[in-house]
Image 1 (cartoon, rainbow, N blue to C red):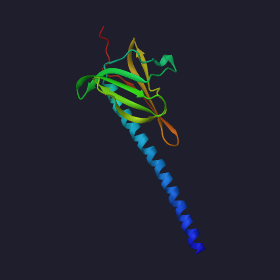
Image 2 (image 1 turned 135 degrees about the vertical axis):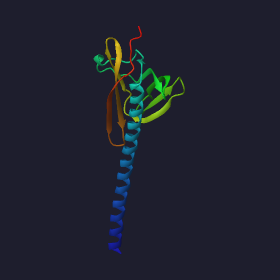
Image 3 (image 1 turned 135 degrees about the horizontal axis):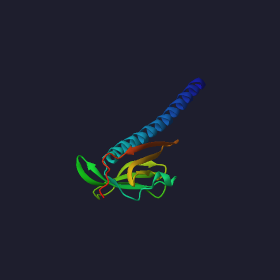
Image 4 (image 1 turned 90 degrees about the horizontal axis):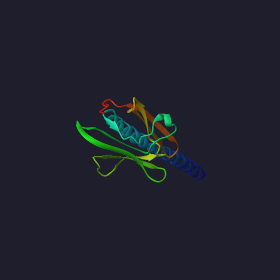
Amino acid sequence: MLVMGIVASSVMMVALRTFTTTATVTNRRDVLADGRTALDRLSKQLRQGESIDSSCPESTDSPAWASSISFSGYIDGDAAAIEWQAAGSSAPYTLEESIEGATFVPIATSLADNDVFQCSTDAGLVDQVTVRLPLQTNTTTVEMKTDVELRNVSDDS
């Protein structure tokens, strides 16, 4: 009987450890998948962008970052006004998207902070946007970052 109790206790300890590890791995997988999806979608829209709202801080203003960005671009070949923002009053922040002034839709919900956007200019035109997604899992924060070149930017003056 004593041996059965020891064996049962051992099995329960292994099972509980497995459940804890599985929950941690699942959380990390879900948070990183949301981040990749958001970064892919945002990068695609920015690459097709024509002009960026002038409120985006320049990389020379380091370490200035913005929590929102608005720009004109294309969705499925049609011109559109697009806005992204990191919303919330404290972590975790939510990365949200709005197209043509519609209600903001959450895209990623686990941002550790709201410093997401930074711009670079060439000859007075914003031609590159750095996007930084600090993703917060149950155990750590992972930063995804990319520089996006605007392909359609032009000086209309």
